[in-house]
Image (cartoon, rainbow, N blue to C red; front, side):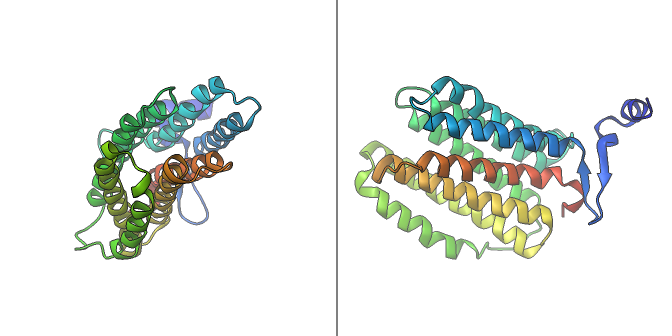
Length: 246
């Protein structure tokens, strides 16, 4: 009854507790995170069943991203905090990308555009939530990685996708560089979470492209989805750990 009164008086804020390390932690966060792990695991398993179960993928792949979006929305600041709003929109467009890529037929370009917009929103988030650091120097170690991936993919890319894939790689390198730069300039658990998440997202996209266009391999779905969901969850978690926000 007391918890019910607290919730009526303070809303979701009543579900926040202070941990020993000084972070504010929503009590729903571990519950939703466990649901993310379960849903993501079922998505991966569905790819490796004999035969694969597309209906399970259609259900649990978008559900996993929806649950990750719920992690980002837990603080309830989507409309009032520009960082939260941009990350939330990035996750929403990621959901659209998930749906495009899992549907039958060749909808890769639609998925690519959806994820491109997601990365642009993440760039806005990392810029909005950061002081003016100047040039993100972390782009220099990441840029050669992007170039190597593009050069490796180039001979196998269809002519109509070469420009789009080049732009996509450039945008995701900038996104990851901004996230890492932000963490190095203003270190906290939240900035570190977002930076690791951005790097995992970049790794996931690289594995997906290599598997799709250049060298398919059996564990591709596990590697792509595992790094993708982990990366998105860490980016969302940078909102869920409220008190460590810069």
